[in-house]
Amino acid sequence: MGLDPAHAALDPWCRSYDHQNLHVVDASFFPSSAALNPALTVAAQALRVGDRLATEWTRG
Image 1 (cartoon, rainbow, N blue to C red):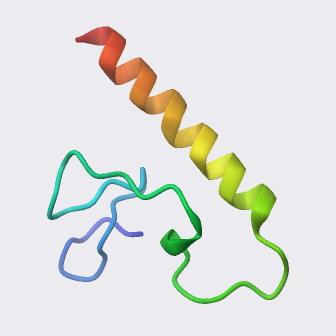
Image 2: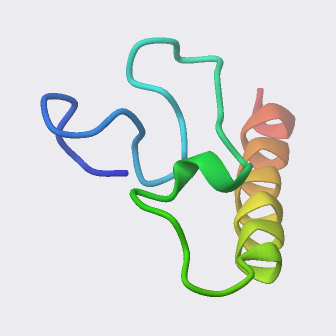
């Protein structure tokens, strides 16, 4: 994740720079493998992105 599409595949909200309707909310958004089980981090990220999507869609 990053702010510059030249150096990152996803923006800070896990949206693909190449495909604006694609959000990555599984463990593949990590830049490297996790040392511990990342299940809670992945769940928290999915909830964060889901809340943002719900807000965007209800605003129209």
